[in-house]
Length: 252
Length: 317
Image (cartoon, each protein chain N blue to C red):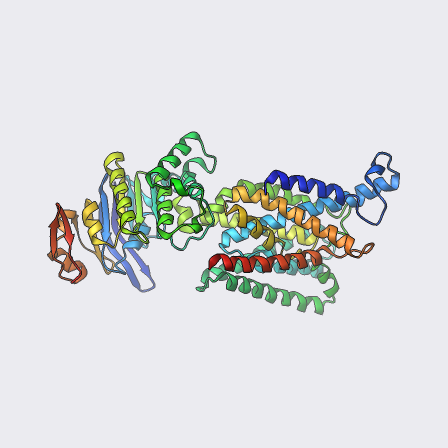
């Protein structure tokens, strides 16, 4: 379990995340939603030691984040930020293999190879495995990075806007894989996600942020609600149930 | 090209190299060498060959490491202030401790090289505009500023000639007793190879490295220490060899990608082959006279570099 207690992040005088507390439930998908600049990514970065915490603390399985050995933590928690600025000429297979780095330190064993193969199959990257990342489309590249995180095989997986650059088909594919990883393998996943309907259809819990603070949080059932959404987005968003799923109709 | 082919080429070139030069020495002579021929071989030819191999390998490898760590193909010891800072360090030793042993001079040059490279890296962190060519120009500017300081004090102290002798890399003066310090680069190259994977991870950025449980700062610092120490060693023994750390890694990454574990050996071998070819060329062009290797490497290197520039541009569009 992950506990976030009174966490604050400041840049100069302005606080981007202000006194946020929350609890991430095991074996569930939790989505962070909210308008631009709400502090979702910063919160995710602080929870995964990518950004320093100015005030408050994050406790992962009873141990303060600062006390975790970073190498050990890399086998417990993986985090993928937006990847569009990474330009490196690696093949898909090599990249996915780097997901095993926390275990192998670069010397791959049979077990590592098994995880690499699984991740490549999971993300349907077989046909591209020998291709360089810079020769792939944005979506293929994104899938390769997610495959790397899958190969890392951690209990907790944090993804910052994993559907960026992806078309509908591959967005759905990735969300299904994430769902399966939670349901079959008991992973705990935290997402920063923009598309509220993906959040609605695939997550168990939703945390809504606005201006660096939590506006509301709860189960997806509670959160996808016109009144709650009004508070988050300042918009009146009708919610329709289609095929058993709650869909927000925010276009008009 | 396969690594084994390149190694074969290197061996052949090395063998040829031993029999090029002003004193008569042919492979057949090795069967019954005269005392003089034996001396030529052990005092001059072999030290020259070994220093070419070591300098070629190590300068190319640190270029590769720098390019990986800065995520910029145009950064190398010559375009990031490293070499210029090391030269300033050498001037300092000439001014204040002219009698110091070479190893101490090397250490001072190393300290300056590290300082200059760190300065460049700090500037890099604050620069918003990350266009690769711009960064390389920035590095050249930093280097030129440091270099002008060197020139100023060298001029004041009447040391300009001494300092400029370190500008031009030259193997013709390498002989027994003058090149041995280059062996320091061997263990450094081994360390570089052991860290190859970590450099690749660090090349993907701090967030990425942290996610994989790697201390980004530590890896970058180790990389910079390797770069600075090798730069200092090569500068103080051979002199500076321009373009080497730029062209060779770029050629290799073009066909091998960015996974350092596999590109690093290729870069090392190709670097040695490249310098060896250039020095053979420099010895033959105006035989029996010799051109310094910095000149031949500079010319061949700059042409290759232009080709790479154009080619990368074409790749992007």
